[in-house]
Length: 358
Ligand code: ATP
Image (cartoon, rainbow, N blue to C red):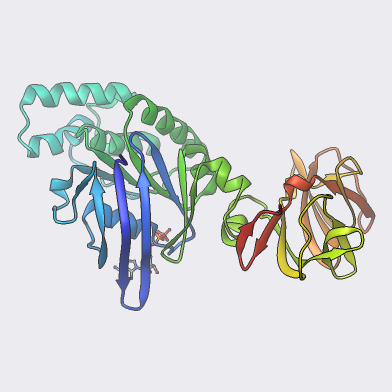
């Protein structure tokens, strides 16, 4: 049984379809990351699960039971926001215990929960300080702690690291990952940062325009993007998408693009008629030299030295191809390069949807 199950959720704000038929299952003890561009509906989804916004249609189940009729308080869900507001006049210990005290938990229970949580988060030394005396990362941990002391059924995190600088963000991200494991908690985490999504998520949900485009492990999302949106959104630099045709020739099945063509392996089923498609190639799957199955000639237009690697902008059949190359690669501007890649690294899309060649 899924810990959280969303069925056909819809939410409109005027003419804006913030959620347009969302179905999702989040497994118990997993970390599910909602990823997508600004405005795709991630926060709306979280707010609806928390009960802070109501859906127009659809159902939410937590541990198998419908919770739509419950108030936010009754849902037993904790939410950590982007702008985690700690009470400035209270100490860290008071900030942590506030929610439990409001619920009239016995003092002993509160004390042991607070010290346990502080231990877990490594903030025991900070219990006597006020938020103004903490660093950004420490404040973030206290905000997490406030959610953790409650031992809720579900954690919702809305871009909780976005106020931290890049270094701290990477550090707190790792802490959060190990904390999630230790706690065995179920978390739904919103971000528009794909590195964050790929490092944190057991399950990554890619959203666009109020719809889920794909749900899968980070590897599935990266290696088998379900459509051209996911293909272009995940991965940096983005996957090259080249328009062309799949057709039979006396040589067998080929992908043709203007005057250029790529011969596909023998043994693939022939096509009755040509098919207009997009061919996807990740920048890191292109290699300099002839070493791989498919060989191309492309003109180098621009070379950017990024330090650990070089980025090459190539022209192949009038299309720009981005390629990642080793930092030691030394091609010259406007040189015609031999580039190769393996067949299994090609991605095929028809009408935006992925398909496999058989
Ligand atoms: P971001 O990454 O920028 O936070 P998001 O993916 O979380 O974006 P949402 O905040 O869920 O996106 O918004 C989804 C859509 O609904 C957007 O077009 C937004 O403008 C709209 N929207 C959200 N809340 C409201 C509201 N209270 N009133 C009107 N429109 C809203």
